[in-house]
Length: 188
Length: 136
Image (cartoon, rainbow over all chains, first blue to last red; front, side, top):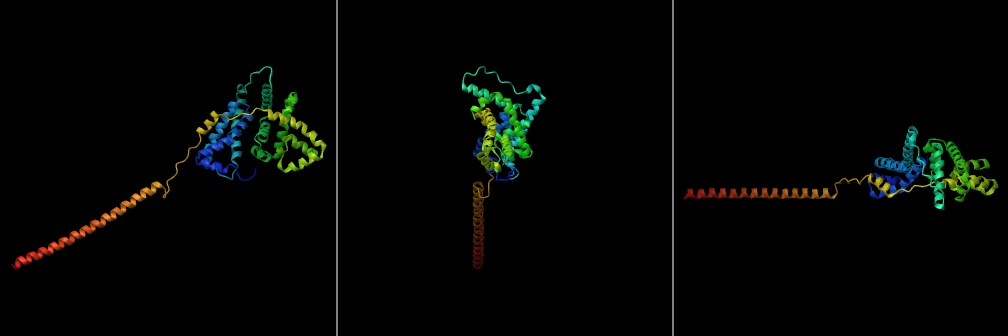
């Protein structure tokens, strides 16, 4: 993990003192990021909102006593969000009826917007069909845009192991979406 | 950078150079420009990249933002420093009271001394008066 200066350090200090402008700035900077992470990991918009909100409850408690230098605040937030996601994924496995609900079949696709929505739906399903660790690796590197070292440190694995998870995950997605190859190629 | 490593890197991180490991990016780009095999290796990765880009995104709505902000810490009341306004006004009051006390005290002492002096004069005068009566 890089020991470079934490770009959020000054902002967190002000949040810890209850500075309203800093609170607003942190929410603007991190809420979309946490929501995206939870959405990709869980595939459910309502659960993603719950996780993002819970992450911020922890942030508000942690900010006044945050010690700079131990870890980047963004990395800590990712760790909290991932733990909350894994809690929910475990709960789903324990209660089989708590599977991600099927979305209603939208029927024929008369226009491009619906076609795009269907493609997105397929991709999200394929993503949810991956193993949790493969999905986590892809989410951290692709959507959260963490470096390979940051993602590997967060997952407590080596960079080689991260690359293995990424390769296997991407291959599984390709196989799952093979029939849509012409459609996905359009967006390339 | 060789074809084997380039293929492994692209399989893991995709076809966009900005996503490749920073320390290998320059060598990978040089390999891409120099070796015609590299472009072929990117093809499958581009398909997967396009699929990932098609995954729906979720926008943080106003209701969620408001819920998050509602639980945020409130500004802490500043602790009054000794030079702060309340302390200064209390201090000024205390100082004024002290000065007033000193002034009043000294006036009282002066008044007392004056009374004492007057009594002495009167007593002396009385003694003189009694003496003069006796003399008469």
